[in-house]
Every structure is written in structure tokens, then in C-alpha cells.
Length: 290
Ligand SMILES: Cc1cc2nc3c(=O)[nH]c(=O)nc-3n(C[C@H](O)[C@H](O)[C@H](O)COP(=O)(O)OP(=O)(O)OC[C@H]3O[C@@H](n4cnc5c(N)ncnc54)[C@H](O)[C@@H]3O)c2cc1C
Image 1 (cartoon, helix red, strand yellow):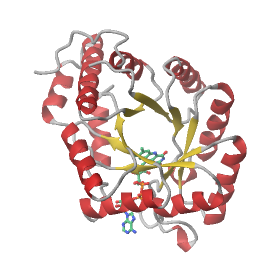
Image 2: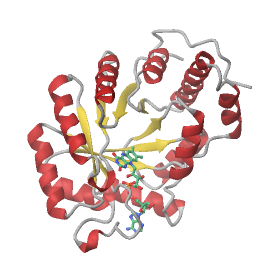
Image 3: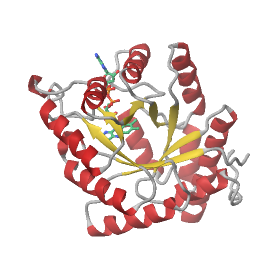
């Protein structure tokens, strides 16, 4: 069911090594041809890749026609440092911030009482500091540290009520879980868009490992099929595309019009899936069912 009213955005991490930088710009160039809504650049927790993130945001704003969203985490920074950072982003021309808590080592999330504890507080600080469009994170399968699914949804509502315009979700592979989460969000009075985060499966073992850390369940039948194709790069790629297209089409049928792709700084899967969803090229012949 190709459609030209779907909107796409693409997320990158800051490249560190020269070969990563080269691949980053190739990926940007390739995805820019799709005229996305925005690109976003992640920001390392505990300030680890903070400068790398700022540098690449600045370069991307200079080089690309696509609006750029800068991620910002509040872990490990004082309130003053955060205010300075937000002002610096404004000076660089950033208009959209993805406001996150980030992940810290045990016991450091309270920032010695000098910083912010949760993303909700960061949203408020950004609002006080400048005029930004703000996105926040949402978790269809519940954030691993949340007391309950209800408490996590309350937190999302507080972040949106504090001034965020949309939520971008953690990646997931069970579309029903996203759709039920969206239903619960609507019942809780959330009116802002909840945009699904899509991670095409480039490497099933890495995706399972990453998913287990952030609470994303990979259905057994999906894992088995990917593992069956693992020795055959062409078949794996075709299956990854077909699987991702199938998932996005299920979302489209349910009225989802925006998709946020986690690219891992590789254009291949995100580019092909986007073009198929737009009806510009045919889906590969791989059958999704077992
Ligand atoms: C789209 C997206 C982009 C991301 N980009 C980055 C990035 O660039 N850099 C990075 O380091 N990480 C990134 N992350 C990961 C994110 O930082 C982690 O998932 C982090 O653990 C939580 O961040 P948050 O903003 O959702 O936190 P919060 O919304 O603050 O929630 C964190 C946890 O605390 C709970 N909580 C919130 N408020 C309270 C309260 N008052 N009392 C008790 N519990 C509470 C929540 O339910 C949740 O369990 C991203 C995640 C997503 C989904």
C-alpha cells in the first residue's frame, strides 16, 4: 500500500573515526534525496560524545537542506551547564531538541543534587531557555526502570504537558504493542503524535542483545527466520527489507503517517524501505511469513 503522505525522519549517531565520518556523509547524502522531515543526531550519555554530537550537528546544519534535531541528555550535567549548552545550540541555529534523560552509571543519576533527574525537567529547562520545538522519548514496551506501564505513561504525559510537541518511540517489532500503547496514550489524554521508532534488522544477534537491554522484545519467529538466512547476505538484506516494509505497512493501515528510522549511520535498509513504502520501487520477493 504505497503512499506519498508518509513522513520520514532519520536518526544518526556522531561519527568518531575518519571511516565513520565518510560513511556518515554518504548516508546523509543518500537519505537527503528522500526529502525527510528531519535528521536527528544522538547525544552520548554522561557527556561522553557530547562535543562530537555538537560538532556534527553544526556541520550538518551547514551542509544539509534537511532540518536537524539535536538530541540532548541531562545525565551528568549541572543545570548551568545544560542552560549554556541549550543556548549554544540556539546560536548554532538548532530549532528542534530531542530531550532525554540518558543513561548513567548506578548512583550518578541524581547528579549530586546539582542537575536534573528526569527528562521532564529537561523539557521545562529547554522551554525556559529558548524557543525550541521539543521531542521526547516513549516506550511502547515500557521503559525498563519504570515502576509500571501506567507510571511510565504518566511520565510521558508529563513530558508532553511540559512542552514537547511529539514523542519518538523506542524501536519495537510487535506492531500490536505499539498500537495498544498508542490507544492507552489516547485514553490518558495524550494528543501529541507518537511517532514509531523503526530499526530495520541489520544484524539479528545485535538487535536481540540491544533489545534485551532496552526492553524491546524480538518475537521468536522473527529471530528464527533471520537466523536461518544469516549465512546469506543477499537473502538477509531482502528479508530485512521485506520484514521492515511489512511492519511499516501494518502501522500505516492503522493511521500512522510518520516514521522515525534508526539508521545506525547506514543508508541501505532505511533508503530501500522508504522508497518501497512510497511506491517508488518494488518490494523484494522475499516472503515474510515462514
Ligand atoms: C527516540 C529515542 C532517542 C534516544 N536518544 C538518546 C541519545 O541521544 N542519547 C542517549 O544517551 N540516550 C538516548 N536514548 C535513550 C534514553 O536516554 C534512555 O532510554 C533513558 O534510560 C531514558 O530516557 P528518557 O528521556 O526516556 O527518561 P525519562 O523520561 O526521564 O524516564 C526515565 C525513567 O524514569 C521514570 N521516571 C520518570 N519520571 C519519574 C519520577 N518523577 N519518579 C519516578 N520515576 C520516574 C520513567 O518512567 C522511566 O522509567 C533515546 C531513546 C529514545 C526512545
